[in-house]
Image (cartoon, rainbow, N blue to C red; front, side, top):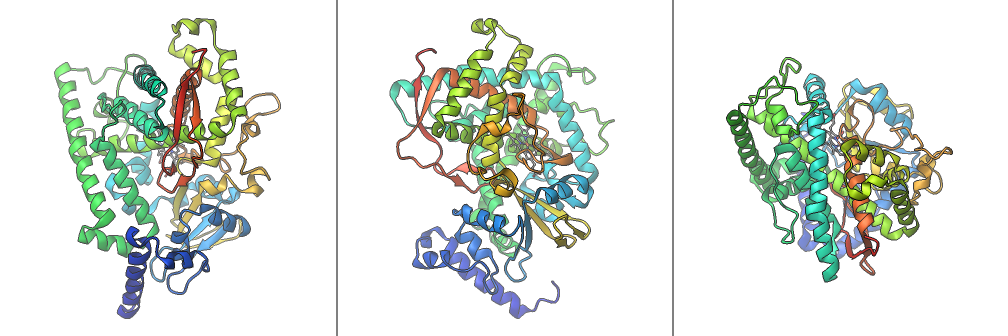
Length: 525
Ligand code: HEM
């Protein structure tokens, strides 16, 4: 890098500024030049493959085709001196090597942390001993009965007291509703209650704009942008306080202010209630995440300091970031796919009814009855997995090797280089999933004996694989099944006529323009 001359750097910067101005700037988005570029070659002089990627940002199928044709692995060439080169792979053998068998050599790395800097030392941002401490504490808290009780009761009451009455209103009025917006608000509210104990009430008939939720959206947009433009450009933007970087700075300030408010209130609540710090909540009453972290037993986690508000704030943000949009996105795609696959919907409904125990009619079942019931819904489980195979909520994974290495596919990779695993593309590889890879077929997940077929996580990567497998997977599956059962028992969902469902590239794979539907109450409900 030190050897780059001022002249080359200036040419590179100049090319980017022109490129950025004309092609990314929304105002000029429809210029003829854009059309021309869409038919242009992949690899450009100086600018590498970046123009092609940005121009085809909404034509993701092109990229998938290229990955399939290059035997599941190819080298993306970024612009000259931009350090954007990346090895892109969806080869399950490479994925297993990177995420599991050679886990210690493949880290998130400093570049990832820099891109996600607004989240500080959040669990998904860190490596090494700090990550181990965070991961252990996360898992313990997620598995505590106190948290599980709270999470289930919050989900059920939000469903019954807010979401279903809202659906009833929409169905009576015949209103077109964006289910993506509804599920994102629903997940934001239940995440916030489970984490802080307070309800932001973003899901209501008024659909208010909630500053905290908006800050997550803005931060996500800016972070995505940092993935697709060279570092020097976003650093320059940040320095100037412009565009997405300005939005990110503002989001960071909102995070700090709102987290401080939650933390101060919770510390005060704990002080005033004089809660016994040694009391074990692992079996009994409900306990939110913030309370559990403030009372964390530090003897088990040397690197975590619950008296430090920065640590508590970052933990709060990581829980919301990790659980909210992922789950909301998965439920949205699931319902989107159901609207186009009435046979699958009918089978799920049948399974829901067949397995309902008598007692459930009176709604008097316990948490363990509920768990037992959900476990029986194998076809629903298969359908949710199938939706996430085709539309993984987190569409790509990023890694960096500490030492140079050779992948099982024979590709040599340098230390500190970038590796990207496009999870969205992986689910569509015919060589991995068969000729019907693009079809929505929950049956592929059902074994000969009628149980759930196991697929290696290096092939089904929606929840990641290896030591960094999503710790919220079980919670997410329980939440999604609970929501689906309640909605399908009560409502028919119809896609607005002529409405096209398509993905929008974001950190979580949302639907472009949402999921616009009408609802009608089922006569049996
Ligand atoms: C359908 C829902 C979900 C999906 C598809 C999902 C998927 C994933 C994926 C792919 C990763 C790896 C990300 C990376 O390495 O950058 C991840 C990590 C993580 N997830 Fe989830 N997730 C879901 C829900 C949840 C929930 C509900 C929680 C908890 C409240 C959660 C907590 C986490 C955490 C803490 C990590 C970081 C783990 C680590 O770095 O060790 N997730 N998740």
